[in-house]
Image 1 (spheres, helix red, strand yellow):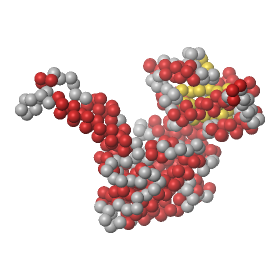
Image 2: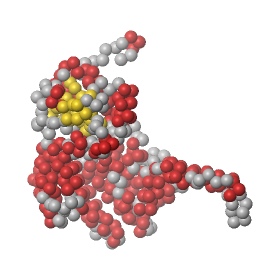
Image 3: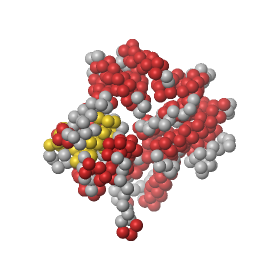
Image 4: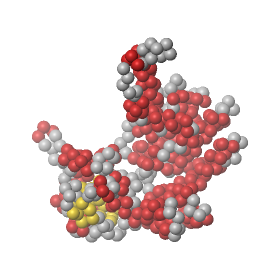
Length: 455
């Protein structure tokens, strides 16, 4: 299975639950901030009055405690992918066990299985294991929601929620390339598009084109070419509408995380050309981002330019490492997956540095002080770049000029450059990086046992 872009899984379609509950879920996840903002100003006890002018500080405290308890309960539910309306339901402790009956229970279980937060609590050690969990979870979501849709007792709101969760599950199954998902996902969407319930039919009709894009990894090359041509043509015919550009961009993301980097680079270049052909001001920044992605995807087999400033304030040019094998790592101290990669990169750096392996970090942190502190605390031995004068240039974070130039839209993004100056891969993470370096330098040396059995 291919590695999946984690950003995809954070894009929850709240059409399945409604705007009201979406807002509540967001509040639940940030309630500590909301509670602090809602905290009343300090008022003398004598001025705290009710209708009969009697001070009631105890009642106020009780109300405040109840509000905090309720917010905590909602927050805990949100962390499981549940809504406030699910709090009193009796659900199986095992999220992979569906309730035997009950429309509210089936919907709550489907929401829980659809939640990236709930799945993230499962113990996995690889992308493959996580994708296997997603496959299992979304197959169960399909089962649960199909039961709800087939139940005549389901009201309009429940049926709409079930349809939204079902369509989202088909998207996830396509992203992990579940066997047969290309056919089954479109069959489900087409069936729902003719549903007698107008809201469900409308929702499904709007999802079909996006699902078609997600079938790309399972299509034959000729079918892929046809679909991509149709997608690009739609942008032009629709006069660069937001929806048509969104669909075309989704096709690019699907290709980017697929197995044919050359096709991905070619398509994104064509999309950039198309977007640059219009004088619509709203399209210009999108065209710039797409051109950056195209530039990054087209790096394989070509040279990469990196010029910037180190965290120490010194000028840096990647050309100074000519003849070295270099890992260019776009990262940030606030990025969990980035930090998780550091021990592996340190191990590889220690093993191969004397043979010519270098690492260049490009930080997308929003300020330099936490970065400096992190580098010192973690004893990061390689050079790290950070834009100079960010307070004046506003070049910090995702506005980092090097990241923008190469269309970096997710981190960590790791690019491996060979000793000849040509990019080997733009996906140099984890085992991919280890295998590439082993091919260049030989297998990773075994770590010798030290006194006391330590390594």
